[in-house]
Image 1: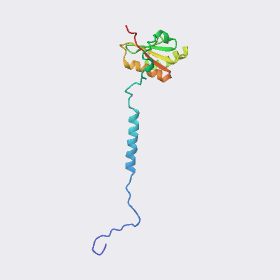
Image 2 (image 1 turned 60 degrees about the vertical axis):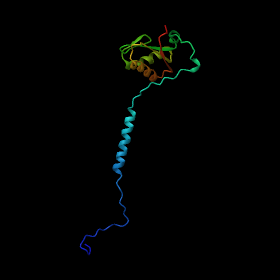
Image 3 (image 1 turned 120 degrees about the vertical axis):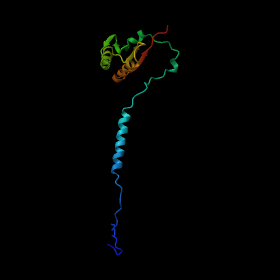
Image 4 (image 1 turned 90 degrees about the horizontal axis):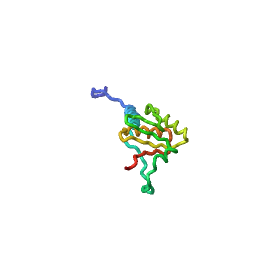
Length: 147
């Protein structure tokens, strides 16, 4: 007690009070982990297709018969039915292996996707993804001949 009857507070000399930053660092790391995880789950909303070459815009279309000898042709029918070189593929998950087999058989590195007009876009994208997965050099989309 001091002379006035109150308590005397003692201060230690040389010590500086510091704020504990551990909770703030923990929150920062949690936010960093959260954003890293959510960024990896972002969906691809577009399919990048190269623009047509301006030099070949006046070129005539190539008939499918001429490209079939150098390409693996995949037909996409309604109801997620796939045909790789006229052989049926049971499931979309089997597309990469079926494409690899067809690619190795004829030493072909190009893919031509021939989609029925009633086929779902998702089915066509699955074939496109399977071609990219196994390393097809060129992927083309076949369109019906104009009447």
